[in-house]
Image (cartoon, rainbow, N blue to C red):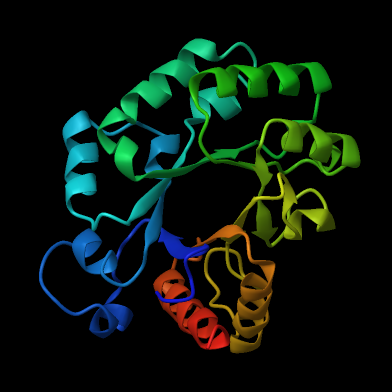
Amino acid sequence: MAGMHHIRIGTAGWTVPRAHAAALPGEGSHLQRYAQALPCAEINSTFYRLPRPGTWLRWAESTPDGFRFAVKAPKEITHGKKLCRCGAELAAFFAALAPIRSKLGPVLVQLPPKLAFEEGLAHEFFLTLREVHNGAVALEPRHASWFTSPVDRMLREFGIARVAADPPAGSTAASRPGGCEGFRYYRLHGSPRKYWSAYEDSVLKSLAHELHAARTETWVMFDNTAQGHALGDALRLQRLVQDSGR
């Protein structure tokens, strides 16, 4: 990982598909093998249900010291209450993360496609969020109203990164990072077929150059897991970024 201290590349989950098993040799669980090759993973299952404390602890103990987990916020907060008056839910969520606190990376907040930006509601949510958590946060809005200069200013005020998503949702601007300038978070869902397609080598090479040139803390998560392409793409991008830094 030399020369990549500011870049973390991983996948949604840590399944090791048979097609890429040879790239992650060794014994142990999928997570243990995965964590020897990649420095981070995104936990999406928390969107539906929070694991038991013992499960968090097992994940933390299965990974090296420098490994980090990005964790997706529960749908109760984003899709149920739609960011409104969810202080208790936020507090419960971050309390549940205690067993993994030493390995906690960004918290991912993915919004419903129909959730439009409302200044007062957004400001109150971010204020409440920052009362219980001062770490990295990545917001993935999917409604066009979130991709404006005033929204970007608010995100910078609260130190929140706007996700760069592929394919973009809500606006073409969704394909570019936004919000706070000291942290970037990419979510690559597969193209041209979302969740199913692998990325072409030319796309990964272009992204590797962009990541290396940015010189800011960056997370890249591959979510094209339907046919197991995420792991292969993540490993390929990691090699390309390493090569571009030589």
